[in-house]
Length: 392
Image 1 (cartoon, one colour):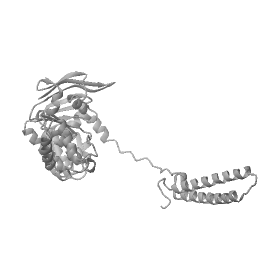
Image 2 (cartoon, one colour; image 1 turned 120 degrees about the vertical axis):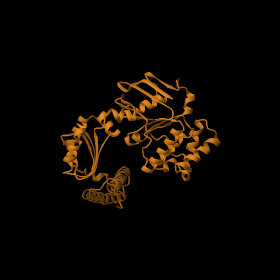
Image 3 (spheres, rainbow, N blue to C red; image 1 turned 180 degrees about the vertical axis):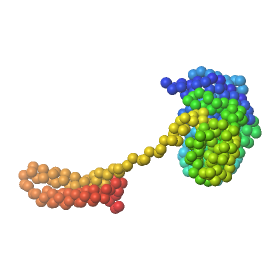
Image 4 (cartoon, helix red, strand yellow; image 1 turned 90 degrees about the vertical axis):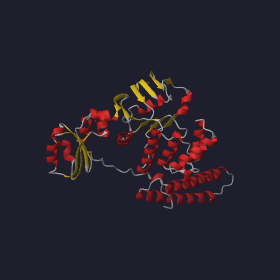
């Protein structure tokens, strides 16, 4: 279905993708993996002809990309791409029309998938009224509405709770049975491990691990031990038989220096932990990912660095002049003083002078000045924030 050979894409001085090759067959779930900034999304956008590669080849069933192929590809981007003010059904129908579905076909498919995703009752709500997870489901509907032959999903599980993750998994398994080629990029290794046939792990733009998932796991041997226990397992990180330890509250995955020493390890740790499970297994994909991308040296270094104490934070005392009460009193005082000055100037220029109004305004200015002083004093004492109003 999809063949990518020696893909390369460079932006200014950054090589985003360097020598990536993929083979994705129909009816296959392919995992495109890598840490943040590894080049996964750039690879996807290049495959989709959104951006042009600097070198390499991309073919679909042996043919180069043509505009007509958009109608056999479904794409779920990582970023939200929905018009927030649009009603959900209208948004889906708009994208259905872009994929050349007739109004009748588009509406039938939209209503079917809205019902399948548990969103039928929300069809006439605006997109912005949905939760992040439900918006993700709408985007998924849009990507599969036209029955694509190749489906590319960038972080499809983002924002989905465990129930909806199962729903998405069931949909992907069903599409796979319908001979759809599926690529999905994710950080959730447990989903990849349960679902994918083949994987490609990219780091810093380069492929560092690829092939059938079963073969990849065999390549890393069976020198892993999974533990479930009660107690404090932090000492496992420094145990002499342990090469690397991924330790949680009541669970740990250990990589041993020599798997034949597992019995000795079991004897050592039973003195300090109440074990519920001790199992020699293949390394998990999560463990392989961390080992290849992070490297045991980096992880050990990070694990042994104590968390620094947070620096003392000194709250900034807001200026009393920003208090609304002070600002209001200052404005009033300024207006009165300005009027008093204007009236005094007017009387000085007049042939017959009458200072009553100017004197009255002067008295009002004094009172206003006292009110400003009181407001400033109160704001300074209370440490009032700029948002604090006169009625607070």
